[in-house]
Length: 152
Image (spheres, rainbow, N blue to C red):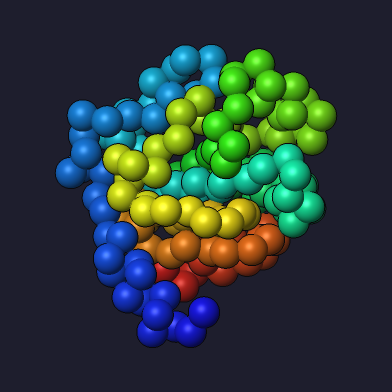
């Protein structure tokens, strides 16, 4: 996808956490994660599926990125594209050794992400809560670091 088209899509998808302060993310244990708590942090939301080979190949990279940055102002969340029941997602998390938090419900509607037609895709939100990038295809820890540098 060319840069201009990406720019237009990202401009269309522009969103701030503060605009949706009444909404929150929920992890698999039911813990609510408010957008106010995410203010000041970079947030990466990765959509994946167990049938997607590229998704599975990027899990170790996302784990590495998460482990290297979890003490910084960076959050990484997984969202199962297939919206499986929690018990099935938990089994897949264990099977594929996903170490970053997984979300129970798909936040694409209240994040105004539009239709997601393929995975993997990782959405990047800056510390002000603005969507700054949509990274399609498999990512490496290095690519994710570069997304921070480019959008900083």
